[in-house]
Image (cartoon, rainbow, N blue to C red; front, side):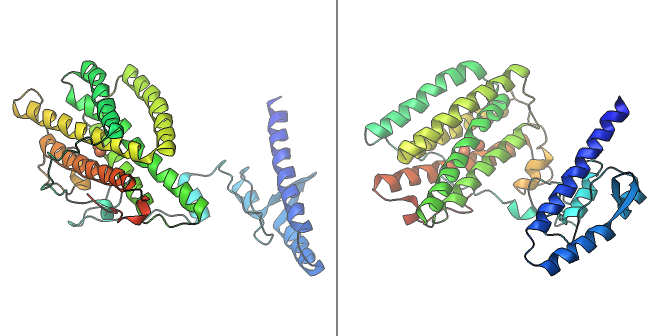
Length: 338
Ligand SMILES: [Fe+2]
Ligand SMILES: [Fe+2]
């Protein structure tokens, strides 16, 4: 029975391969081209037994991996069965680059390159606040303030866990905004003025905050379930809001960032009064923010808080552009703004 099943799988692969070949053959433009392809096909496959055709390579490797017909257009395929990741990489010619650090040691991160790292601007004003100027601003402000009540009740003083969980939400607005501006740009045949990149950079920066705090806090199963639920609701709600009113969406994000600054300031106070141990900084944070090797969690919270202040300014700036009746691409985009 097992033998029959494996035979069926093999047969279907062969049929697929031959079918693709004949589709390509029928689409060839000239008789000469067709003859060339038939010759290529015959020389490429060998009759093993019955109607089982195998390539010479296949016979040598005695593997079920399907080979391609290099001469026939559109026949290249990536069948993963039987191939190791390094073989697949070699097959497609997609080879990851290796980097070295300034001290000559090997760069160990695959998720970001040395050129993605930066030193935070610690001189940014942490107290800047946008005073609500109209109903829309007040709505944004009080929406964010009211969201803080359940957050405070749930996390209390567990700032490590709180930071990690809130970063899962904070990484959404930039991605949604960037995605919608991308769609708008291609729909309207219009430049984005760099705002797509700027918002996607913000999303990536927030995701790196999460990757950092994951190293110091391990979410429990019910916290993971909460993240799953909140993401489902928040992503869709923010998407709809951005479609209806990008100004309100950016204003809400601006106020969320103000709250993030407040949370990280409380986190620092807890470290300073000894309630939270000030352990060594995770390696990913040392490399991403170019921190000294002996950096601590406190140093990490400081740079993350500075990032949040930059996000606050970017989002309030975006909301102000819309408030002036303009589109984002009409104002300078904060690309690479940290
Ligand atoms: Fe963040
Ligand atoms: Fe942020």
